[in-house]
Image (tube, one colour):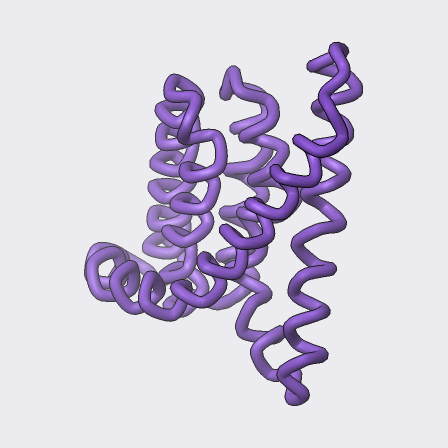
Length: 169
C-alpha cells in the first residue's frame, strides 16, 4: 500500500468514526459537548502522523457530514465552530510566550465562536427567552470546562496517540 493510500484510508476511517460518534452523541443530551471534544481529540494522531493539512481536512469532512447527518444541530455547530479545529491549532497557541497573553488569546478563541453558536441556536432553534443570569452561568461553566479541557489536552494527546497512533501506522 502506498503512503497516499494509507493516508486516505486513515483519514476516511477517522471521518467515518467521528461522524458515528457525533451521531451517537446526538442520541444522548449530555453528550452535546462531550462528543465534539472527543472527536476533535481523536483527530490529533492524524495531525502528528500525517501533518496539519490531513488533520484539518479530516476535521472539515467530519464537520460537513455531521451538519448533514447529525440530528443535534448545536453539537455539529460546536464541532465546526471550535471543538473540531482547536486541537489542531493549540500547539501554535502554546508557543505564545507571555502566559497571560496566551491565556487571554485562548479565552477569546474559545468565547467568540461559542457565543456565536449559542446565540445562533438560541435565536433560531430555541425561540423562548432564557433568563440572562442563566446564560451567564452557562458561559462561566463553559469557560471552566474549556480551561480544564485545555489543561488536560496534553494527557489526552498522549493517550490518543498511544492507542490511535498505533492504529494509523
